[in-house]
Length: 257
Ligand code: MF3
Ligand code: CO
Ligand code: CO
Image 1 (cartoon, helix red, strand yellow):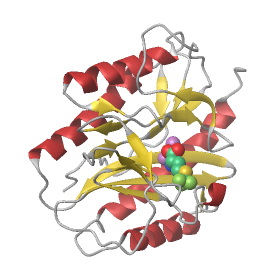
Image 2 (cartoon, rainbow, N blue to C red):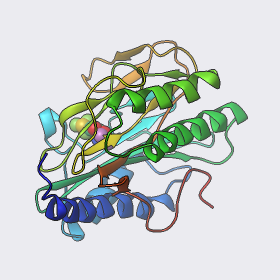
Image 3 (cartoon, rainbow, N blue to C red):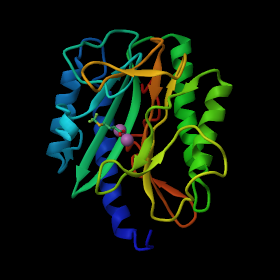
Image 4 (cartoon, protein in one colour):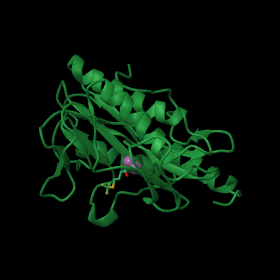
């Protein structure tokens, strides 16, 4: 990694901000009766009207502009005519491209009242991501990230999905290195200033096993247990890190009101 990453970071900041603002925009619409297709359309329009475009659209044959993963869907849920109901837990995962650079972020949303165990899962997932982000600085290893997440999550009695991971991201959507959300301290690649990647733990209330449905995309928990995910795009600086996808409105985790 060369040390001339100032311009790359400026582009990552712009793309990341648009992705975060898209989630901010959609927050007020997450109510019983809206369909995940309507969510997709609103976000598609917002991104387009603000100088970007949606990375998932036509990515490897995907035909929607974002992912909507409901309840036991782990990731890559495809928007449909399914209406949101009271009690649903939904992940919306937005990836915006601006001037060729990508901002990739997801948050959980809850519809009305949800069970306490679901709220615990969501809180644990968010906290595991933030704990991993807070240790980031040059010199630590990729295994430190996974270890931080895994230790926190397993202590709460939940499990870390193995089959999907975070990824390098910049002028391509998914690039090296893979960022595993489980692992051993002091193993793997050493972090260097200028690296840009996502941390996006998928955490299950039951076992970590996942299967992909016949649509080729939708990943669900094998045991039908609830799954949660948050995602930030970050960059490694000289002394620490920068989060490119923080909410502009100060939204952290649900409930947002
Ligand atoms: N946004 C997802 C990620 O975090 C990738 C979605 S790819 C898609 O990496 F094609 F399913 F949209
Ligand atoms: Co991602
Ligand atoms: Co994503």
